[in-house]
Length: 385
Image (tube, rainbow, N blue to C red; front, top):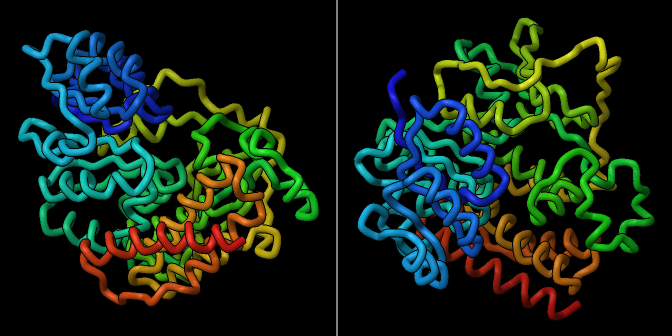
């Protein structure tokens, strides 16, 4: 395996920071050529000085700041609002890590697959919005998509080397989020702070709220269907609080292959960067004796109706998953701002999903139109509460 040139979109978030830790461990194998962030330009400045990329992307406010701090002779400082697609399409780029969140990742994701890159997404939104188009473009342009999300990475690894015709079912595991053992009657009294205190790991605010509603797992169901070309009824969700088994695949003979590992994002990140090879991660091995037990439960769809709503959007297909994603982004933002209560997140999103007239095989333009419509409709629905 030669040296791979890497671009990281969203290098100042937790996935981006962990990706740079992997890069730092193997400086002879990875060279950072592009880093982007939005408003955390002080951390981006530190990263740029350490890893010396040729291209930086940041918000317009950050462009002015970085131009004072970093020699533009060696590093091009560009706008994340306009230039992400050109950064991921650079000829010398081998791997694009999509660690930025939100619908804004769709454009650069498409640009990266159209340029035939290895794309390592930790972003669910782009695949939820336009997974069919992304996967079709990847096939046409010879791009390889190796997911970073621990559950999707697990499925990718369990499918590796197996005949797809022999697949029976995929089991996506879920920790259950912050509210696994909280009765539904108490949901509306929960504060933003309580929702954001995930019992197992620190994540961004949006994904932590989605983990609490289980919408995040619903998005992963849609993402898995797109990534691995599955039928909806081939995907089951299992609550697995220990979060040791990251996902499993069952084959027609009854054999089940599971991917296990300690809960550290550097494992799936490193696998995506080194694929198809594996390298020593420097992380501790799993101690099976200390595990004592692994538990599994069925999801409670009445307590967490967002999961069922995601399955509904996936079955209906077309532009509906995009609408689900956009409505959820707007509703969660309003919850984080203290405008919506917790249960209203689902109520608002479900209403927007029901109000949408589905476009069955949408173009990218129709997907972007559906995204805009869903955001406007969500604000309208919220204003009527």
